[in-house]
Image (cartoon, rainbow, N blue to C red; front, side):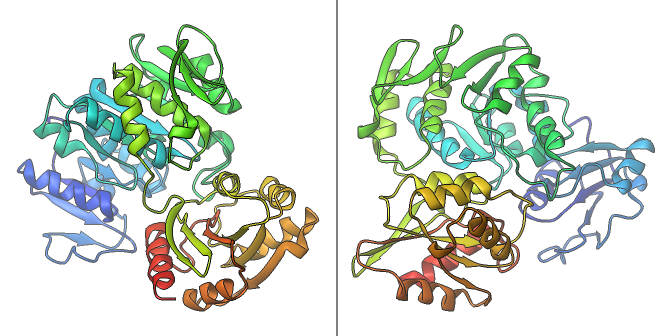
Length: 437
């Protein structure tokens, strides 16, 4: 690529950083230095490594991983010195903007992206590239397959500093999230809005009338809008008597869908499919077959009439609220806790009270959630706040307090970094322990 001038620094050596190094290797670019303050496992065999972000001005190109804040002083200094700051997401957009469908949201983006991927796989006979947030960057596949459409799940981290937008951008919802990374809610919203702000008149923004912050993005949308949740404008998807309806065409009844997720996510999937000109029968077939993704309300096991579900990818209070809606009143034990994202738990606490949900708290954020539930008047619904870091002990204690017919759901509403490598690690440990009960 013409803009990848050497020497190059890769900031962060997690999934995306490793993918960046592999991509540069395939491009025949060798003057590369890995910079990572915390994690250098697997980098030992590389030519150059440094465990800090010093002297970034020595590089012509800097590839930023999503977890590295774009506004760090070292990055600003390098930019002022003339370095090009980019990312794997930006490289993908520069290469294939017109082929990219990007899906974001505070909640539901993983499930929605997976469902869209299943529909488009049927439509394009498997010739579709899937990747993005929490998955493999798509640059290499986009290079290898220049005619294939691309579906990306994206986060605010990836779009915070970009000046280019995808052809189709879906913003499911925006609620306070990642405020441990963003300066404030406005900064978070601005990062999300970059998905549509730089579109052309031929591009599409898929926006949610049920989410105020998503709806507001229409004010600055230069492209076309496909509305979700209301019969609005020239293109819309809405519910009518439990049917998904798109521009007056009935697509499918919710009773024919196995997937446990927020109803808005189903509307988004159908709307995106229609923008890809997928016929309705293909949409129906894919939606009937799709049962969900790993770590999203994933059924694990039933023991003595007690069911376990892994919802470890639930890292916000709003996601936990969606989980509550999937189970019968009085039959849910919700495992909540983890590390902080500076979230507010008031609405979740009210939902816990109103839906007679029993709660088992753990992790650093357990104390904050305990206070919110107490203030909502539902303190007696808290089974325990276990401050042990022994996850097996915690799960066995929850199980000992459950009754036949209960559903024990790991839906933490928090990040995972106090006890685990990431949310996937948390979910995998949960499943392993439950299977051993």
